[in-house]
Picture 1 (tube, rainbow, N blue to C red):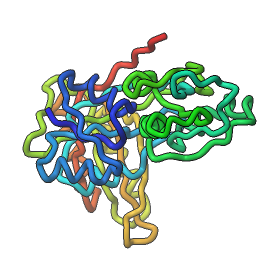
Picture 2 (picture 1 turned 135 degrees about the vertical axis):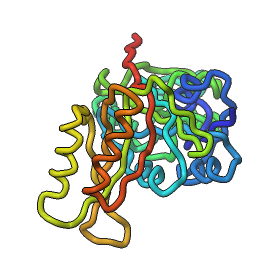
Picture 3 (picture 1 turned 120 degrees about the vertical axis):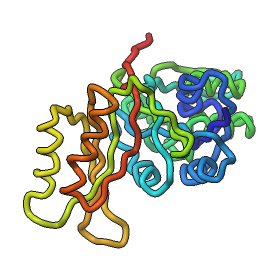
Length: 276
């Protein structure tokens, strides 16, 4: 299966894709919007996208892309994010004066960077891409923050492992396919929905009360502004469900209270696995 990702081979998205589809062929893109276009246009059969990090929060752009494309979430996985300081082979940690990585990765390694004031941090479009760059340039004074897989993929060395501020660092990834090709797992116990409510008092409360009356457990709610309509919002929710049919009932009870309801997908909730 050809799977589109935002980022380079060796990235966390690459690792998540291989966890979800063991024999995946990775199709990398610099922009998430291009990964979605590849799925919509048939260049790729699916995309694997990060949707939420336990420390940095939600990836807002990906909520917007899920809503605007004819796709559905088929699976999810949780990936433990372990950051490493990486350099070209033979370089020493005392030689590093510049460190490149994705802004979120840099933010998650603040304590390490503060302890090494000689190292100036520079934002880059991708964690694995920063490793690819330093290997291509053969710069002994540049480092990158990325995964162990990225170091192995590009033939670089890890100077210091596990430099993230918190070990409770997980990212949730979705496997997304065209709606016409997405398969709903009959054991699905989670549903993701997007909806908007009428601009009148109590409309959101009424909609959420309907979900509560079903016994559906709301595990996440996120609001995003509607483009071109100031002060109007789309709400994104994740709910634990006891059956696929309960997901259908959730949509039915929301519809009378909402101007729009879109199912983003029904799937099995990912199980958190912590590795040393």
